[in-house]
Figure 1 (spheres, rainbow, N blue to C red):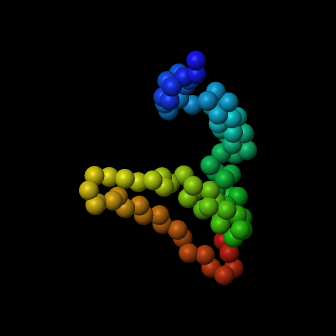
Figure 2: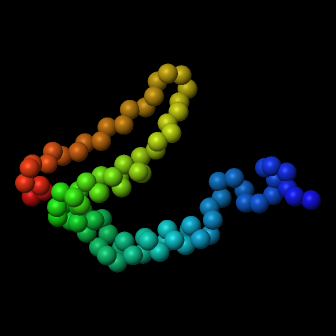
Figure 3: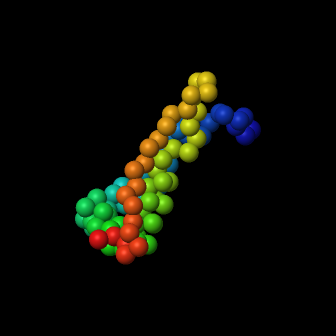
Length: 88
């Protein structure tokens, strides 16, 4: 007999072992490639890299924000202006 909806399987919120292993592998590679310092240097190498960096960063910001009542939290992201010549 198949499980009824909500019964059996992985508990709600449990992370797949493959997902955990992939995240660990990316963290190791990130550290080996220079970590946050190299990431910042890459982003500042040219304007396209900086745009890609901000696209990736924006994906880390929660998209589904709910709260009690009509008061929603405010997020402020300070983005430095880019000159026409690109990053310095």
